[in-house]
Amino acid sequence: MKNLIFIFLTLITVAVSAQSTTPRTGNAGNIDNTYRKLNYKYVPVTADAAGLDTLLVKPNAFHTQYFIASVTDSVAINVTTIANSYLGDELSLIVTNSAGSNHAIKWAGSYIQSATTTTGGAVGTAYLTSSKRAVINFVFNGSVWVEVSRMIQ
Image 1 (cartoon, rainbow, N blue to C red):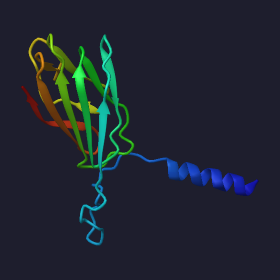
Image 2: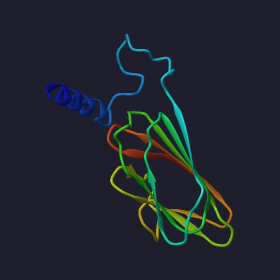
Image 3: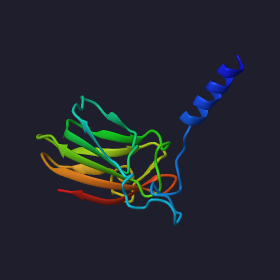
């Protein structure tokens, strides 16, 4: 019985992790800082159904790239967890608007902060015209994802 409790507590300790205010490479002189540990993750989003959808984003690599091939209508981006995020991690959203009409990319949740304030809409909403693209980049500052750049055609 004691062994089971020990194994259970060990598994919980290993499984629990939180966001880090240090970079993935560490910050000490004797830590490997050659960037060999940094990994890249590509997440294709293939379907955007009718109605305002919420894309649940879970960045867990040094550079996580979400690619939305076609936005049917407005979409909200929500970073649901920062448990595997480290200081300096990057999040990139590449979005292509469908043909036909204008659509919007909105932000949801408390872990993402837009740097741009737009007139006539929600704070930081990105408006896409028909068949155009957008690239929006974020960096993790130790507690939230902060927008660093935005390019919209």
